[in-house]
Length: 294
Image 1: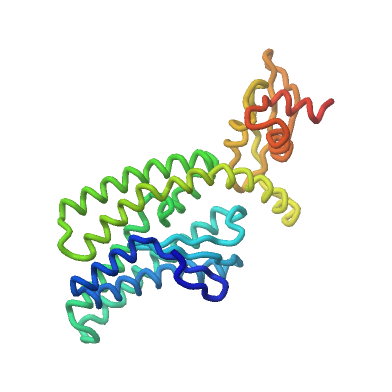
Image 2: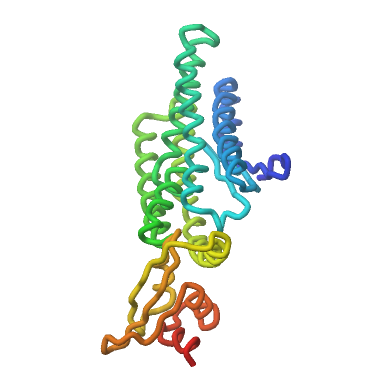
C-alpha cells in the first residue's frame, strides 16, 4: 500500500504494519507504537543517506514490521562492496541510537519505561535486520560476500534457504516467549513476512547475474582494467551453468575443452552472454565457440 511520495521516493507500507498499528492503538500502546515507527524510519533513512553518499538514487522504501526494504535506482549494477555499506547503515544507526539512549538514561530525559523500550526496539531492529536472510540487511551482506566466490545466483539461493530457516526459528522463539507485548507480536509478524519475502529476491537473481555481465563491460571501459579469472569448461557444458560461475569484480575468460582435452576455443563473458541471448539458457559452450570462430 502506497503511503506517500517524498522527493521522488515512494513510501509503501506492508498491510501487516497497518494491522499491528491498529491493534496497538486499541490495546493502549500508542506511544510505544510511535517509538517503533520512529526507529524503523531512522533505519531506512540511514540506508537512504548512505545510498545517496555513494551516488545511487533511492526509488522506493517499503516498510514492514521491524524494518523495511529499499529499492535503489541502478540496483542491478550495484557493486557488492557498496551494497554491503548501504545494508549495514541501517543496523549501525539503530545500535547507535540504543547506545545513545543508554548513555542518556541516568539524566532522565524520558521515563524509564519508554527509555528501556526505545533501547529494546532499536536493538531488536538492528539484530533482526542482521539475520542472514533476504531481503534483510544481513542477507544482503552475506549474499554480497558469497557472490565473490560462488556468483550471485548461487549465493542468492543459499541465503534464501537460510532466510526460511531463520524465519521458522524466529516464529518459534516468539511463540515460546508469548505474545503479551507489541514487540513480541511484531516479531512474530516479521517472521511470517520473512518466510515469504525472500522468494522475490530469489527470482531476481538471474536478472542480477546477467546485468552484472553488462555492468562489467562498462566498468572495464571506465577503469581501463579489471582483474581476470580463467575457467576451463567442457564443450558440452550449458551456458547457464557457466555464467552462474561468474563472480563480481572479475572479468572471466572461458576456455572450452574438447573430449580429448584440447582447447577448442576461448571466449569472454560478453560472448557467453550473447550466446545465451541468441540460443537460450541451454546453449552448449561448443556452439558459443562456433559463433565466434566460424
